[in-house]
Length: 490
Image (cartoon, rainbow, N blue to C red; front, side, top):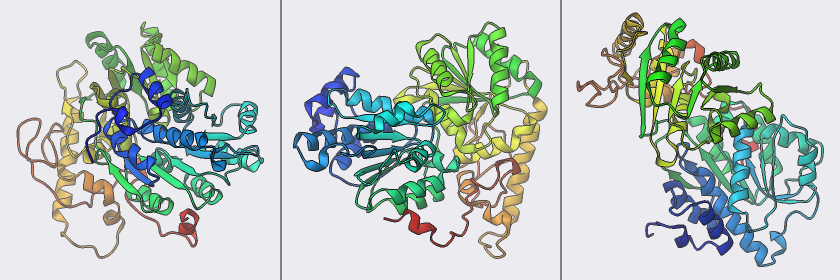
């Protein structure tokens, strides 16, 4: 197939093309170029691409096209549900912010098609959502909890769903929505088109996709769990009491215009936002304990430039889709290594570049080691600042040395015994081969490094996951309970 360099080559209807031009869309991104023709042809899709690559438009544009064409042909099946609560297309996503943004995308791209769409999510009163559902919808975007709640009340009917989209599937599993997804799958017709998108593709996500999709076309734009190429990430070893002073120093010396600062806890986000504001840096916190209206108000202020700093937790990391973010700061390292990728990806949207600063104290060394494993490289360390902790850096080097020696001392290929240490290597261990005895600036699975010194590849995957991360991301697979697979199979 010839390379697609313009949306005009996709044979889209004029109302859709005009809406894309109004949004200054001219050339499809790689995920859009690959996915749109396949979705238009009715194929199931298994899409894996980094955040910020245009995944939403990759499914929203062809869905709008097909619904519009069918309606214009006056097909009986092309009309919105004749009964209240019936929908034609169901998009399920894990967070309120993502649901709202996807709904806004459908609104923008379909602004000239007169298709009916709505968004439902928890944290707000349901009256307006129920009113939208009563008309019958072409497209419904929903979070799992509110969707099942309204289904239970009889306000949503999924019996006529023709297109099902599961977006951010890996995050969906991280947040514990697997049972909800299985319930939803059982309520939609077996004969449907299914589109499955995920930023990463670990084994549990691939297993879920296998139960939902039928002969899917696979699209993988970037390898799972690798950082955006254009993000310049830097690492600062420091002591915890000095983190705030280090952050203020960076704000004073770096050209940090639009910044997201990530903390591990909601309380920490609130406290840091107050401290920044008291230092004449306009900042507000956003996390799961904030009401939906407050979160949306804060995001609008951040998007418009009214505030320059957003202090956030991981629960909303993928729901922040704001252009022009210049810097991301990991004030606390994430408990889940995969979250590092999504955090710093906020500043490398659709081909733009950005900078990420990460602070690491002595209590976070295991977390840093996990991050280097999943990146398959080290992060460049900046030591020339008054808050540098040499003891934390040396302790990290010692930790890497111990881990490397522990792996190299174990017999290769010994799979017997089934001990916990062996099982916990799994996917994460494979991503982090080669934690060498050198400093954290070294690249771990390559012949060259940021310091210019070669490292050796280590093929063993038997390092234990740190306790703080639990077992949910360690690559372990629990034996499925009876009937579990049948819940997701068509």
